[in-house]
Image (cartoon, rainbow, N blue to C red):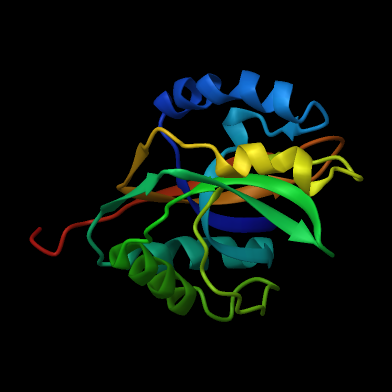
Length: 185
């Protein structure tokens, strides 16, 4: 299965996002928004994870002894490929050290599992939409410069998701959820 570990978002994220959907649609009508049910903060992409490694991955995540934290989504950004806008995202302007530490612990814990051997820099974000081919920078500049009402994401659990590719957006299925524990417990 194609898998990743992520922070799930609360139901209230949908309400927060709804305040911006109309603005996105009127600013860049060719933006294809991601269904809110697919929104999350990825901590580690595993790639292809054989079925026989799923239980091992969950066991390794259960051994994480790390405190919960939170992350504040307070800006919009644009990922580009070959200089062209491709993805609209929201993320933190300041990445909490506890979140960086959690991602590093997950990387270390899941080392050797899955097919993803890439070691890209951790950049927490929530993908909100994908721009159609041919979208210009001047069309997306207003979104990128827009002020954002902060949305606090409590980081109390991490989820191992299965990603099922198909027509349109992928579907994400939670295969296991692991509660983070405080060192004081």
